[in-house]
Length: 509
Figure 1 (spheres, rainbow, N blue to C red):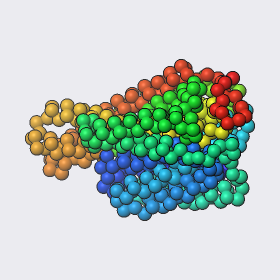
Figure 2 (cartoon, helix red, strand yellow):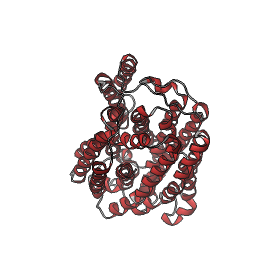
Figure 3 (spheres, helix red, strand yellow):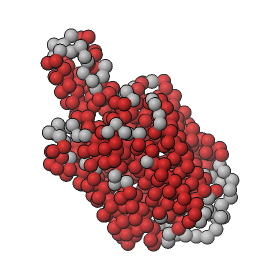
Figure 4 (tube, rainbow, N blue to C red):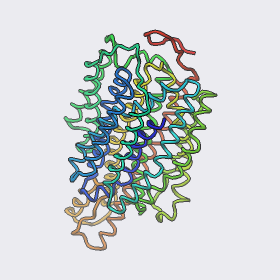
């Protein structure tokens, strides 16, 4: 538990703190709006492409061994990110972090799942959720403080001592765990198909904000991704030793939880990103204040996640996985209707109610969701199951960031154009103003404008971002409600029967 919590906290701190320091990072590296999405998504792209392989390797070769390798690679990538001098190399080194994460993340939960009895698994995963949240409670606040001080690089450096501590515990205290009955044959063909297919598909979506939907790069990448993933399914169906047994999806609960994960995390990932940008770039919060706004959500997770896991053990996950995402959706909906505020002083009457409801919904979702995934398959497939669910959550984050990024630019452009059409500015000045729309909330007013016009255009930029933010948050809320609907349709309060032998269990209770 200790090693899993520490290693997971390393990844969580990196993610939560990085979102908060994006404005500071953008200014320091002169990054464009599209660059921000690549900095976030380079990590997610590689992680999504390789995470299924990481989970499968852990099951076959040893969860501890693969987990430790992942932590080591993640530490190396973090150190390189910390010393980077430009956007290009930051994107490259974030990709190295993605390789480490793909080996590390499935190992965390699969070690817990294979070590703890089925009846206690929900409570254990709830403890993991609460503890990792408690460890990362300082993530947004720390990121905000470092960002305000111009020290955003230390967001990456902090991973090094945390990762070393996890490696020492694993090396000295944790026994190796793997499926001894498994053939150690590696499904190389399947691994190549899934890695290349996910990479092509995610790359295609990532190109949309830069090139638009009607681009040969987008069409070619998406088509290649679909073909390769189709080939992967065919390979897994025919393989004697598949890395992802398709029979897992015959379990309605396993399929339903993964559908819930896709919709819920697609909405939340994009929604929280645009909320962070809105707070700093439009509402005038400092990066520290922006980080502290998420504190109520963090406290709720600490107090309620373990309790929710214990209740899910007792009553089953279905009710929690309907009510929780619905509550999160209501919270995001409340956040969508917050317009321009007077700054951090108005937080308690503007953003706080939505974040409170959102946090309550997620607190009763995370542990039951993870427990449902891990409890719906035999222990021999715990690494694979964790890899599948984590892959889906990362893939949908990439898709959401790319698609929502393109939509945000589209919404921003439409509102900005309508406002400019009402002015009598020269066409050349209008073109200069519209050239900044790709930077969204960081759009700069052209220097050639008069002081009076600069004030007006700056307000137009703010209005356009708030309109884009509103639309993005509405879509995010709908996706949360879609996740709750998937739970209502597919998830039952059943678990897979543990059966001896090498065949995947086919009967459920």
